[in-house]
Length: 175
Figure 1: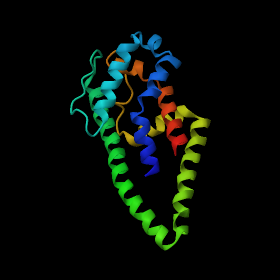
Figure 2 (figure 1 turned 90 degrees about the vertical axis):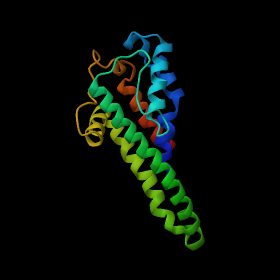
Figure 3 (figure 1 turned 90 degrees about the horizontal axis):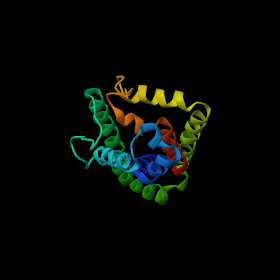
Figure 4 (figure 1 turned 120 degrees about the vertical axis):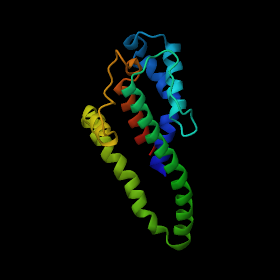
């Protein structure tokens, strides 16, 4: 529950991206004005929600067929985390109540894993973000559609991998 909550919160926490637009100088990288960048980003985040629109249409950016397929896959990943949050929240609440009534020590393994998994991931990110980023994509996506060409999918110019590193660090910090 804690991990899925941290992921869902971070994926929907727009101020992190708004900060990075300036901090990472995304306007210069993309050649787009800040308002246009934020408009396209907001459409993407709204789309990725399980309650979002069924079709992604960027207001000002072109998108290739492979880009469309990739974002459909991303929406599925977001959905898994959102559903996991809801289900694990219900199960965790029931489990915590039961464990407290029975034996409080039963929560020890959960506590250890909640700290050990993010700590291990944090070390990997600190050692080599690029490798972690590529490995994540190879595990989660079973094609190379995540490798964008800025000529056909200019959205990549407003989504630098450093932003995703900031998301990963935020998830770890929240956990």
